[in-house]
Image (cartoon, rainbow, N blue to C red; front, side, top):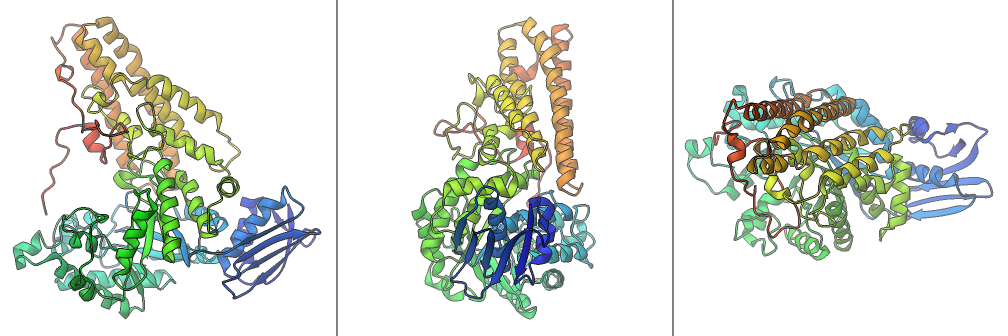
Length: 635
């Protein structure tokens, strides 16, 4: 397609050139003319039109031009006349990429992602980096973790800026620093396993270097300083050294010190709000305890020069979000909000929960005037999934940001245009976690795609959960469905390779432990022999095909650091299958008189009698074995 742009092109033409290959267009004076006009009136929003063979894009900020340009290219393929008007509902809309759970995105991959985000219309992106950025004085900070150099961060910032995307560092200045604090070189900075030692001057020297380094790397004046889930604050080295102090007082004093540093560098800080709501809760429960009221004394001592960010990924009722947003308003400023697309702790995106929760949250944010909205893509427990499976969820956030009410048909059209993949195919990925036995929608956050893969075939910690379920035909059918949507011409086709091969593994492995136990208990030696000589070797072959596909996906998207964790998991899985074959053959051959692992009664991993899911576990090591992987000391 040949296009000719003219008019207010300053600041956007370079980005258009970068998008030519992705959009399959050519800029030439002989192309279809498109007049570009920029206006400062934010009330106008975005206008995209085509009439009498001439196009026009009227926009008010750089990223809205790129959304508008994408809308133009999308519609001009099928229409001779169109007129589209949109208006931003938020001041800020953007994803947050978790780069701290081993999957550090390559710079080139990030650039491809920024192109997609620009077409969607996101004007901000947060980089969640606990220790994966370079600090000159701290060689162990992000050591062997794929940390970004300062030059790489500057390169990312400059590239995002070409599309009008504000890149915002999202770091930790209190908790969630386990991967740095594990080193002996950081012992003097540690309170507990993941929490910094507060009221310790060298701690503030470290934080000063963090913030100074990032100030040089990013043009944005905004910075997210973290401070979530710091329940252990003051309960480790601090307690032994200084004695007991109230956590709220410690939190406020530490926050005040950090805010002095951000002020020194001219920054506008944000922070997660959950610790304040937890400390205000009479029950001490999670940050979304609906009965929590913020006491006036807490409000009085909380600094005002920080934006509280309310995060919530699980509520599906709009009124819950409205209630919690209003509780946050008690601090005096409008809170920011962070929702989530559930891509963590599983191989499959949970769209049943993500889309319901996002719809409720975004409508509540509009009703309550929240202006800064983000959507998190966490990567807990090693990021077996990937960022790209979340693109349908990101598109939903983008479409909400440009309309008062979500147009579902427009969402489907836009995600296919922006990513090349149909909405229904993103939803197909979620079927890895919704076999028979799971409610439609998967709002229980069940993750069988993970625990049925990693659990041991002889010990079968989740076998009780799948007794009597027909999972073989389910996953075999899913493998075929995933194969049917493959299209090697699409740039992102490869993200279906791992799910397809995982379905092939689970078609055999999901209930093989149940079959083994039943055959052993009833003395069916022929069935045991068949499983050992045919089924388990075939599972081994399919696991190796899955590992190879997963390795290819990882190294295509991410730096190599962190893949070793997943590689070790596959190695452990394969070795345990090999040992299972060995043990069964020894039993059949009379070398041993029993298989002790199969003698044990199968129990539920946890109570699922009141659940509409098959269960949930957050950690690989808890799925693979009930025995000790490592001993974690309290500090």
